[in-house]
Image (tube, rainbow, N blue to C red):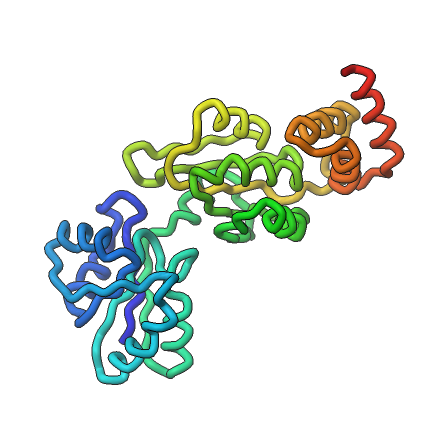
Length: 276
């Protein structure tokens, strides 16, 4: 049996009694980082063989793990925080276990995406969990172009050193939507900030991002649900140009975002130029 065991995303009290029991009973525990997980197991006085299973060795280790499972061993899979296989190692192993017809048991537990989604207040019958976007801006923008028409909230993960670049690309592609940004969930310095993308970009430029982030952005607005004012268009043009886009690219972006004729946006851009 392979047991998929979620671990706390910060506060150690969030581990379940069931996960603790399973970790005490298995023959082997697979961990993303054995040093990190070793501290968790030591805290709960669990002493079991511990091996690493991370993105760099998962595929090569899976065959041996499958052999151990065929031999009757009980194995637990954990990650550094939250649910294994969700933006964490484990998905490949889980698929192979299912393909081999071996028994699999997924235990419920802590998950940062759902906590942050509820914290955002953008609660609708549907949402999309995306996880980490591509690291390079070009690929990230291409992905965001595909996502910008999604009509319900989208949940992203991001590391602190890439947060501002990711938010800038979100702004460039999505426009100035409402967003909720949570960091250090369940930990001592847990924090959630809500506002427009422009407002939160300004805040994080001044403060500097720290911690692990979950970003929940509102779904694409219906064009019939709100009136687009000349001020909206001018403000968006100004922000895009200030972020480094050329005037031509900014005009194309705004034309696409608001579904407006390019010549209309161009005329407004001339007004922006005269104000400069």
